[in-house]
Length: 176
Ligand code: 4NP
Image 1 (cartoon, rainbow, N blue to C red):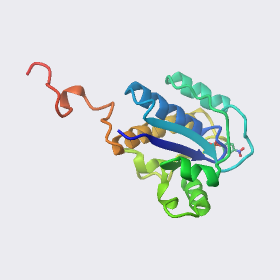
Image 2 (tube, rainbow, N blue to C red; image 1 turned 45 degrees about the vertical axis):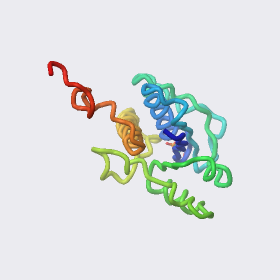
Image 3 (spheres, protein in one colour; image 1 turned 60 degrees about the vertical axis):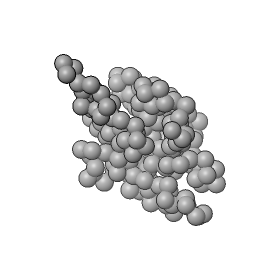
Image 4 (tube, helix red, strand yellow; image 1 turned 135 degrees about the vertical axis):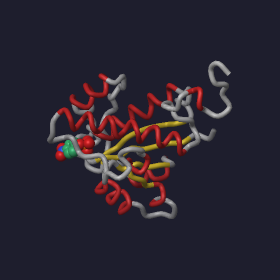
């Protein structure tokens, strides 16, 4: 499998996209693909550059076993469009901002919305900004981004973690 570099992008890079990065890294690691699927995150804004993720994002992530600990940085169109194969905006505004920054052939086509990869949240406009809300907002972010990570893996041809082993193609069902 070729190396795939994925950049998750939100507004501040302290709530949603560092969670997406941590989930993607963990799901790749669980499958032994940590060297093959590379995840990073960035913000369209620069207010929080250098900061650790929001304490709530770190705490809700840790409760599900994810290390949400990357330092915030701002999306750099000159470097990031070339360095990444897939650039995943959290909401419609992020996607619009990223598409506006695309200037060279092929760059715009790398931009996708996180919910495009979801199963149950596919019809949602995007992953809502939890910054000014409460704990339930962070739990929703985690639920959505777990689906996003699994959907991205599926799009890359990696089998789903939530598919029962017995029903995976090429596996022998217990008792058969
Ligand atoms: P994020 O959340 O885009 O998910 O990192 C936000 C963090 C900070 C701000 C807005 C959204 N802010 O306005 O500072």
